[in-house]
Amino acid sequence: MKSGWFWASLTAGVLSLGIFTATVWSGTVVGSPQSRFVPAEVRSAPGGYRSFHFWHVGSGGYRGGK
Image (cartoon, helix red, strand yellow):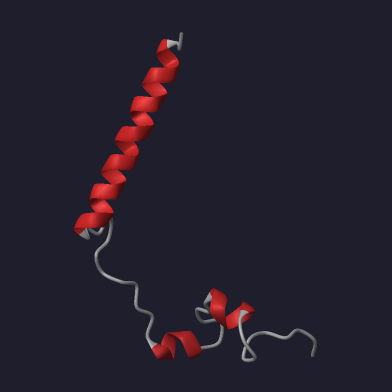
């Protein structure tokens, strides 16, 4: 026989998964609906924003050394 904690955890998990699935299926955006756009002049400025892609992907990224 399963304990009360098992059924409570199972119910919470199924409920959470159901809410997540319904949210994704409906296309609802949770959080800030606006994308975070960083203008080119900010990105190219010294000390400006650099994405993960800039540093780690492709031939244009950081290579180290002098």
